[in-house]
Image (cartoon, rainbow, N blue to C red; front, side, top):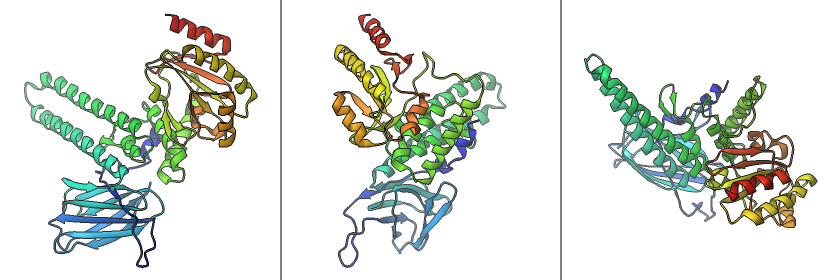
Length: 398
């Protein structure tokens, strides 16, 4: 059903580097070149040897430049790019680093020819995030490799039957720990393309950190975090298409329930009116009233009076309201917030009924409300005004 999502990218086994913001380079006439990218590097043992740079497409590597290091192992690569993208810097068959570069950035890099690490980089936020993720990934892989080595040593030993469960628990602990780190990484850095790498990382061939069939909520979250900001980036568009296909497959299967009380509410990222990103999980620890509405919808505008009453009565408690707008015109959305005096959190991807968040919550009419507890579990769905106030009264009087 959902396993096709896993084939979107093959970048997960790579190790990553960083770049840096500097003053934009200028041409000989002093004109700023804003889409110029430069890599200034040095490789120990790289004198007279070649370095290649490739852009990482969703399905192929695109050659950018190949250059020869000087007698000290130094090199420099400059090129023009209009968009943020992943790149692989290759030196020898076994040495490479991966960069996440924006137009206008300059990378300082140093390493050892033919080795993935150790290396040093300075620069862009995205590449620094990848470097941190890579370090933790490598740490987990090394620990798993040690367990595999011990397992092979013991396989013919009389102690094997006793030690195998111990090794299995250690293996599971390491994989679970790295999955937890990866999930936190995704939520902390929801606005960066770097989270694609965290989503597609592998422990080894055929062993992904996140399984599409069991972790579809993570794929949904990454999709919601990136599609509005990076629509047009091939890998992001592919992820979005295949998540939609997976959702459609789920809908077409018989006996597939909607959101149920007690299950974890799907997390998501969307944009505030000022353009900043916000996740549902930012409000964890509170009861959250998640309300779907639109500035153009008279029914949902009328229900705002009930939400204001709930806010006035309970905002001193661990209680938050997050409204998700199904508007497609920003001015209509923002004016409705102001006119109705809605003082809580608001997000929208301005896609009307194509909203990813609305799809996550199976919203087919507005207003629609879901109440979520401090642990992120669904308490109630589709609470009209009187029922909502009564439910909140029960919760906070207890």
